[in-house]
Image (cartoon, rainbow, N blue to C red; front, side):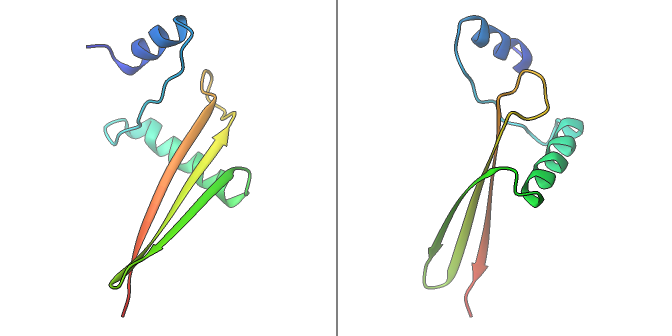
Length: 89
């Protein structure tokens, strides 16, 4: 089984694009990416898609943040999705 770096290199050599997930076992990069995304969100330097759904018992808000040209070499885009569930009284 390839690691993500090998898989990404293989795909790029073939002229393709890819999406790889960042998991909690990659703590250093996850922490760095989280701080970077939070900085971009607070500076409003990103594209934001919002969606809200309301049911009888709860409302859910979803945000997808798209950061083009992040500062990591080789990455073209970082996408971060967040959702929050709000319970109704």
